Amino acid sequence: MKCRKCGGSAALELRRHNAAFCSPHFVEFFKKQVAEAIHKHRMFTRDEPVLVAVSGGKDSLALWDVLIEDGYRTAGLYLDLGIFDYSQESRARCEAFASARGQKLHVERVAEAVGAPIPEVQKVTRRPTCSACGLSKRYLMNRAALEHGYAAVATGHNLDDEAATLLGSVLHWQTEALPRQSPALASTHAKLARRVKPLYRLSEFETAAYAFLRRIDYIVDECPFAKGATSLAHKDLLNRLEEVSPGAKHNFLFGFLDKARAAFERLEDVQLRECSACGQVTTGEICAFCKLADQVKRRTGPSSAAAGMVE
Ligand code: Q46
Ligand code: ZN
Ligand code: ZN
Image (cartoon, rainbow, N blue to C red; front, top):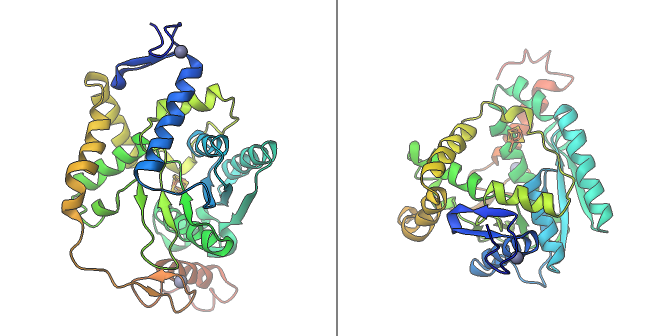
Protein backbone atom coordinates (compact mmCIF):
# COMPACT_ATOMS: atom_id res chain seq x y z
CA MET A 1 0.00 0.00 0.00
CA LYS A 2 1.28 3.41 -0.94
CA CYS A 3 0.55 6.83 0.51
CA ARG A 4 -1.87 8.72 -1.71
CA LYS A 5 0.12 11.90 -1.22
CA CYS A 6 3.81 10.99 -1.46
CA GLY A 7 3.86 7.43 -2.78
CA GLY A 8 5.86 6.30 0.25
CA SER A 9 4.86 3.29 2.23
CA ALA A 10 1.44 3.79 3.83
CA ALA A 11 0.81 3.37 7.55
CA LEU A 12 -2.99 3.46 7.39
CA GLU A 13 -5.68 2.47 4.97
CA LEU A 14 -8.95 4.40 4.95
CA ARG A 15 -11.32 2.19 3.00
CA ARG A 16 -14.21 4.61 2.96
CA HIS A 17 -11.97 7.19 1.29
CA ASN A 18 -10.40 4.53 -0.89
CA ALA A 19 -7.04 5.88 0.22
CA ALA A 20 -3.96 5.13 2.27
CA PHE A 21 -1.54 7.51 3.95
CA CYS A 22 1.90 7.52 5.53
CA SER A 23 1.92 8.86 9.11
CA PRO A 24 2.71 12.53 8.38
CA HIS A 25 0.19 12.67 5.56
CA PHE A 26 -2.48 11.02 7.67
CA VAL A 27 -1.96 13.72 10.34
CA GLU A 28 -2.26 16.32 7.59
CA PHE A 29 -5.45 14.66 6.27
CA PHE A 30 -6.91 14.62 9.82
CA LYS A 31 -6.21 18.30 10.39
CA LYS A 32 -7.70 19.16 7.01
CA GLN A 33 -10.94 17.35 7.88
CA VAL A 34 -11.20 19.34 11.13
CA ALA A 35 -10.44 22.61 9.31
CA GLU A 36 -13.12 21.81 6.73
CA ALA A 37 -15.70 21.08 9.45
CA ILE A 38 -14.93 24.37 11.23
CA HIS A 39 -15.06 26.33 7.99
CA LYS A 40 -18.14 24.68 6.49
CA HIS A 41 -20.28 25.12 9.59
CA ARG A 42 -18.73 28.44 10.67
CA MET A 43 -18.03 26.89 14.06
CA PHE A 44 -15.71 29.64 15.30
CA THR A 45 -13.11 32.08 14.05
CA ARG A 46 -9.51 32.42 15.10
CA ASP A 47 -10.44 35.42 17.26
CA GLU A 48 -13.13 33.64 19.24
CA PRO A 49 -12.10 31.77 22.36
CA VAL A 50 -13.32 28.17 22.33
CA LEU A 51 -13.97 25.97 25.33
CA VAL A 52 -13.04 22.36 24.55
CA ALA A 53 -14.90 19.85 26.72
CA VAL A 54 -12.33 17.17 27.53
CA SER A 55 -13.00 13.81 29.12
CA GLY A 56 -9.45 12.45 29.05
CA GLY A 57 -10.38 10.11 26.18
CA LYS A 58 -8.82 10.00 22.72
CA ASP A 59 -11.44 12.03 20.88
CA SER A 60 -11.61 15.13 23.03
CA LEU A 61 -7.84 15.29 23.58
CA ALA A 62 -7.21 14.76 19.85
CA LEU A 63 -9.60 17.62 19.15
CA TRP A 64 -7.90 19.92 21.63
CA ASP A 65 -4.52 18.99 20.16
CA VAL A 66 -5.57 19.86 16.60
CA LEU A 67 -7.04 23.19 17.67
CA ILE A 68 -3.92 24.15 19.63
CA GLU A 69 -1.70 23.10 16.70
CA ASP A 70 -3.81 25.16 14.35
CA GLY A 71 -3.44 28.28 16.48
CA TYR A 72 -6.98 28.57 17.81
CA ARG A 73 -7.63 30.29 21.14
CA THR A 74 -8.72 27.43 23.37
CA ALA A 75 -9.07 26.32 26.96
CA GLY A 76 -10.19 22.95 28.25
CA LEU A 77 -13.13 22.15 30.49
CA TYR A 78 -13.01 18.99 32.55
CA LEU A 79 -16.21 17.97 34.31
CA ASP A 80 -15.40 15.75 37.24
CA LEU A 81 -18.37 13.38 37.37
CA GLY A 82 -17.19 11.67 40.54
CA ILE A 83 -17.21 8.24 38.86
CA PHE A 84 -14.73 6.32 41.03
CA ASP A 85 -11.20 5.70 39.63
CA TYR A 86 -12.36 6.48 36.11
CA SER A 87 -12.86 10.16 36.99
CA GLN A 88 -9.58 10.43 38.87
CA GLU A 89 -7.59 8.89 36.05
CA SER A 90 -9.28 10.85 33.31
CA ARG A 91 -8.82 14.12 35.21
CA ALA A 92 -5.09 13.37 35.63
CA ARG A 93 -4.78 12.84 31.84
CA CYS A 94 -6.46 16.16 31.12
CA GLU A 95 -4.33 18.04 33.63
CA ALA A 96 -1.11 16.53 32.28
CA PHE A 97 -2.16 17.31 28.69
CA ALA A 98 -2.97 20.95 29.54
CA SER A 99 0.16 21.60 31.55
CA ALA A 100 2.46 20.01 28.94
CA ARG A 101 1.04 22.44 26.38
CA GLY A 102 0.74 25.47 28.66
CA GLN A 103 -3.06 25.60 28.26
CA LYS A 104 -5.73 26.64 30.72
CA LEU A 105 -7.95 23.85 32.04
CA HIS A 106 -11.16 24.68 33.89
CA VAL A 107 -12.29 21.94 36.26
CA GLU A 108 -15.82 21.71 37.63
CA ARG A 109 -17.04 19.15 40.10
CA VAL A 110 -20.46 17.85 39.18
CA ALA A 111 -21.07 16.81 42.79
CA GLU A 112 -20.81 20.44 43.84
CA ALA A 113 -23.38 21.58 41.32
CA VAL A 114 -25.87 18.69 41.50
CA GLY A 115 -25.43 17.79 45.15
CA ALA A 116 -23.93 14.32 44.66
CA PRO A 117 -21.51 12.49 42.35
CA ILE A 118 -23.10 10.85 39.28
CA PRO A 119 -23.30 7.27 40.66
CA GLU A 120 -25.15 8.60 43.70
CA VAL A 121 -27.51 10.69 41.57
CA GLN A 122 -28.76 7.53 39.93
CA LYS A 123 -29.36 5.86 43.29
CA VAL A 124 -31.33 8.69 44.82
CA THR A 125 -33.34 9.71 41.77
CA ARG A 126 -33.68 6.31 40.03
CA ARG A 127 -33.08 8.20 36.83
CA PRO A 128 -30.85 6.34 34.31
CA THR A 129 -27.24 7.29 35.04
CA CYS A 130 -26.42 8.47 31.53
CA SER A 131 -29.52 10.61 31.32
CA ALA A 132 -28.71 12.51 34.54
CA CYS A 133 -25.06 12.68 33.51
CA GLY A 134 -25.80 13.96 29.99
CA LEU A 135 -28.17 16.60 31.30
CA SER A 136 -25.62 17.78 33.89
CA LYS A 137 -22.81 17.88 31.35
CA ARG A 138 -24.78 19.96 28.84
CA TYR A 139 -25.85 22.38 31.55
CA LEU A 140 -22.40 22.79 33.11
CA MET A 141 -20.65 23.16 29.74
CA ASN A 142 -22.95 26.00 28.80
CA ARG A 143 -22.68 27.63 32.23
CA ALA A 144 -18.88 27.47 32.15
CA ALA A 145 -18.78 28.97 28.63
CA LEU A 146 -20.98 31.88 29.73
CA GLU A 147 -19.17 32.48 33.00
CA HIS A 148 -15.73 32.50 31.42
CA GLY A 149 -16.66 34.25 28.16
CA TYR A 150 -16.29 31.51 25.52
CA ALA A 151 -18.35 31.88 22.35
CA ALA A 152 -18.47 28.17 21.63
CA VAL A 153 -18.21 24.83 23.36
CA ALA A 154 -16.48 22.16 21.26
CA THR A 155 -16.95 18.47 21.99
CA GLY A 156 -15.06 15.46 20.65
CA HIS A 157 -18.03 13.65 19.06
CA ASN A 158 -16.78 11.74 16.03
CA LEU A 159 -18.48 10.24 12.98
CA ASP A 160 -19.21 6.95 14.79
CA ASP A 161 -20.81 8.77 17.74
CA GLU A 162 -22.95 10.90 15.49
CA ALA A 163 -24.04 8.02 13.24
CA ALA A 164 -24.96 5.93 16.32
CA THR A 165 -26.99 8.78 17.81
CA LEU A 166 -28.76 9.25 14.50
CA LEU A 167 -29.55 5.55 14.28
CA GLY A 168 -30.95 5.62 17.84
CA SER A 169 -33.16 8.61 17.02
CA VAL A 170 -34.38 7.08 13.77
CA LEU A 171 -35.14 3.70 15.34
CA HIS A 172 -37.50 5.47 17.73
CA TRP A 173 -38.47 8.22 15.31
CA GLN A 174 -37.54 10.86 17.84
CA THR A 175 -38.52 13.72 15.57
CA GLU A 176 -37.70 16.25 18.30
CA ALA A 177 -34.10 15.05 18.45
CA LEU A 178 -33.47 14.92 14.70
CA PRO A 179 -33.27 18.66 13.98
CA ARG A 180 -30.89 19.07 16.93
CA GLN A 181 -28.49 16.53 15.48
CA SER A 182 -26.02 18.80 13.79
CA PRO A 183 -22.25 19.41 13.73
CA ALA A 184 -22.97 22.97 14.86
CA LEU A 185 -25.85 24.32 16.91
CA ALA A 186 -26.08 28.08 16.71
CA SER A 187 -26.75 30.15 19.79
CA THR A 188 -30.46 30.95 19.85
CA HIS A 189 -30.34 33.00 23.05
CA ALA A 190 -27.83 35.38 24.60
CA LYS A 191 -27.28 32.86 27.37
CA LEU A 192 -26.64 29.89 25.11
CA ALA A 193 -23.15 29.21 23.79
CA ARG A 194 -22.71 27.73 20.31
CA ARG A 195 -22.19 23.94 20.42
CA VAL A 196 -19.86 22.46 17.84
CA LYS A 197 -18.40 19.07 16.92
CA PRO A 198 -15.32 19.60 14.75
CA LEU A 199 -14.53 15.83 14.59
CA TYR A 200 -17.83 14.79 13.01
CA ARG A 201 -16.12 14.01 9.69
CA LEU A 202 -13.62 11.63 11.31
CA SER A 203 -14.20 8.06 12.44
CA GLU A 204 -13.31 6.59 15.81
CA PHE A 205 -10.52 4.60 14.15
CA GLU A 206 -9.12 7.80 12.67
CA THR A 207 -9.17 9.74 15.96
CA ALA A 208 -7.49 6.78 17.70
CA ALA A 209 -4.81 6.73 15.00
CA TYR A 210 -4.28 10.48 15.30
CA ALA A 211 -4.00 10.29 19.10
CA PHE A 212 -1.50 7.44 18.75
CA LEU A 213 0.64 9.19 16.14
CA ARG A 214 0.65 12.40 18.16
CA ARG A 215 1.60 10.42 21.28
CA ILE A 216 -1.34 11.73 23.28
CA ASP A 217 -1.63 10.02 26.63
CA TYR A 218 -5.36 9.35 26.93
CA ILE A 219 -7.48 7.09 29.11
CA VAL A 220 -8.30 3.92 27.20
CA ASP A 221 -10.94 2.65 29.61
CA GLU A 222 -14.49 3.71 28.93
CA CYS A 223 -16.72 5.12 31.64
CA PRO A 224 -18.00 2.08 33.59
CA PHE A 225 -21.58 3.16 32.90
CA ALA A 226 -21.05 2.96 29.14
CA LYS A 227 -21.10 -0.86 29.29
CA GLY A 228 -24.31 -2.25 27.92
CA ALA A 229 -25.48 1.14 26.67
CA THR A 230 -27.70 0.92 23.62
CA SER A 231 -25.49 3.44 21.86
CA LEU A 232 -22.74 0.78 21.87
CA ALA A 233 -25.10 -1.74 20.27
CA HIS A 234 -25.88 0.84 17.59
CA LYS A 235 -22.16 1.40 17.01
CA ASP A 236 -21.64 -2.34 16.68
CA LEU A 237 -24.39 -2.63 14.15
CA LEU A 238 -23.00 0.22 12.09
CA ASN A 239 -19.50 -1.28 12.25
CA ARG A 240 -20.82 -4.55 10.86
CA LEU A 241 -22.48 -2.67 8.08
CA GLU A 242 -19.30 -0.73 7.43
CA GLU A 243 -17.34 -3.96 7.07
CA VAL A 244 -19.43 -5.17 4.18
CA SER A 245 -20.10 -1.74 2.76
CA PRO A 246 -17.28 0.77 3.41
CA GLY A 247 -18.67 4.28 3.67
CA ALA A 248 -22.08 3.17 5.00
CA LYS A 249 -21.67 5.13 8.24
CA HIS A 250 -20.52 8.20 6.43
CA ASN A 251 -23.35 8.01 3.89
CA PHE A 252 -25.94 7.48 6.61
CA LEU A 253 -24.86 10.55 8.59
CA PHE A 254 -23.93 12.86 5.73
CA GLY A 255 -27.02 11.90 3.75
CA PHE A 256 -29.15 12.86 6.72
CA LEU A 257 -27.34 16.17 7.23
CA ASP A 258 -27.45 17.10 3.54
CA LYS A 259 -30.85 15.78 2.51
CA ALA A 260 -33.13 15.03 5.44
CA ARG A 261 -32.36 17.10 8.51
CA ALA A 262 -34.07 20.25 7.26
CA ALA A 263 -37.34 18.36 6.85
CA PHE A 264 -37.49 17.79 10.60
CA GLU A 265 -36.83 21.36 11.63
CA ARG A 266 -39.75 22.43 13.70
CA LEU A 267 -41.94 25.05 12.17
CA GLU A 268 -43.00 26.67 15.39
CA ASP A 269 -40.41 28.48 17.44
CA VAL A 270 -39.83 27.19 20.94
CA GLN A 271 -40.19 29.99 23.46
CA LEU A 272 -36.97 30.25 25.45
CA ARG A 273 -36.91 31.91 28.85
CA GLU A 274 -34.62 32.11 31.84
CA CYS A 275 -34.93 29.62 34.67
CA SER A 276 -36.35 31.36 37.71
CA ALA A 277 -33.91 29.51 39.96
CA CYS A 278 -30.56 29.74 38.13
CA GLY A 279 -31.10 32.12 35.22
CA GLN A 280 -29.99 29.66 32.55
CA VAL A 281 -32.09 29.06 29.45
CA THR A 282 -35.09 26.74 29.59
CA THR A 283 -38.52 26.31 28.04
CA GLY A 284 -40.35 26.02 31.38
CA GLU A 285 -40.36 27.93 34.63
CA ILE A 286 -37.55 25.89 36.22
CA CYS A 287 -34.86 24.21 34.13
CA ALA A 288 -34.36 20.44 34.09
CA PHE A 289 -30.99 20.74 35.81
CA CYS A 290 -32.37 22.73 38.75
CA LYS A 291 -35.16 20.16 39.09
CA LEU A 292 -32.61 17.35 39.17
CA ALA A 293 -30.35 19.16 41.66
CA ASP A 294 -33.33 19.95 43.86
CA GLN A 295 -34.40 16.30 43.85
CA VAL A 296 -30.87 15.17 44.74
CA LYS A 297 -30.43 17.73 47.49
CA ARG A 298 -33.79 16.91 49.05
CA ARG A 299 -32.96 13.22 49.12
CA THR A 300 -29.38 13.44 50.26
CA GLY A 301 -29.63 16.49 52.53
CA PRO A 302 -29.80 16.32 56.32
CA SER A 303 -33.59 16.67 56.37
CA SER A 304 -34.25 13.90 53.81
CA ALA A 305 -34.99 11.31 56.51
CA ALA A 306 -37.45 13.64 58.19
CA ALA A 307 -39.18 14.29 54.88
CA GLY A 308 -39.65 10.54 54.51
CA MET A 309 -37.85 10.67 51.15
CA VAL A 310 -41.20 10.94 49.42
CA GLU A 311 -41.27 12.53 45.99
S1 Q46 B 1 -23.13 9.74 29.95
FE1 Q46 B 1 -23.03 7.71 30.85
FE2 Q46 B 1 -21.12 8.91 29.48
FE3 Q46 B 1 -21.88 9.97 31.78
S2 Q46 B 1 -22.34 8.10 32.93
FE4 Q46 B 1 -20.49 7.66 31.76
S3 Q46 B 1 -21.29 6.70 29.90
S4 Q46 B 1 -19.82 9.65 31.13
S5 Q46 B 1 -20.52 9.64 27.55
ZN1 ZN C 1 2.87 10.32 2.49
ZN1 ZN D 1 -32.12 26.34 36.48
